[in-house]
Length: 97
Image (cartoon, one colour):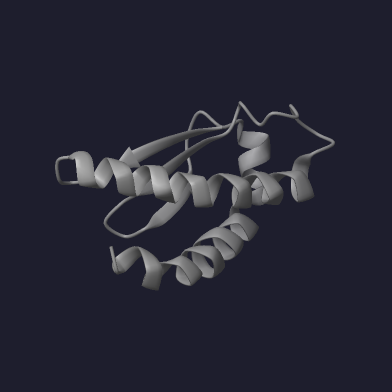
């Protein structure tokens, strides 16, 4: 699994630390999601999955290198589980930094 961090601003040391903290929170949540939806259909390590993270909007999308057959299968549920639920749970803590 690979994360692409997208920001209109320069990624300085403070933003890098924020990205690391966010990745430590996102990675297990996304892994659990993928296991629940695709474990029997794809590589067990999920190395073929790529995610774009918009640092201004705190929004995660499934990136283009991810195989289309998987992306189509999980896109709507991914948005609901990761963006609407998980990110909203994290927002107060992340914005406090």
